[in-house]
Amino acid sequence: MIGTVAITAALILCAGCFSSSVQPPKAWAVSPTDAKPPAVPASGAFSVTRQGAVTVTAPFDSTSFVVRRADGSVARDPYNVFASPPSTLLRAAVRARLEADGRFGRVVPQSSSASADVQVEVLVRDLSLDCTIPERRTSRAAVSIDVLRADRGARTVILSGDGDGTGDVKDGNYSAAFSQAFDAALVGALRNLKEQPPVKPLETIPKKKGENK
Image (cartoon, rainbow, N blue to C red):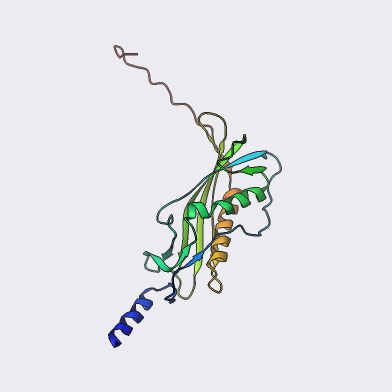
């Protein structure tokens, strides 16, 4: 009996930043925030924008929280998870931020048959819980945003931007912390949007004499 208690206590201590709860894992959401829209230029606005894919890179693409530890390693928190896969869960927050931004007009889902001026794609490069500082938990998010022309045929990137954000975990509210971090990352990426040079067509390489045309 004593040995079982000792093993249980050791497991809890080894969890580091993890909760000591032995209850089933809690599910948390990432929701749109009530933050005011950032100041943006009135020119160059689009009337209709299609919300494209939200892609989450590994190892942040699962429901389990990725925890960063002080020794540089990462671990999975067995006590806290996202309510849905992040690529699905984050879509509502992305759409709300695009609508609040002011430049993207009416934002329609990817499945909509409506004609759109541009399509916005989001790459999530970080969605983790930073526990590298003792007694402190910080949510982190980093995103890249690409704005593509929605013309027929090949779609070219006309604007790109990167952003990152953090959120403090207060009273164990991971939903609020991750919502704050993700929205801050979106705001930063939208603020940093820059025009991308047009893609030049590949130069035609002249064939050597005797080669088939």
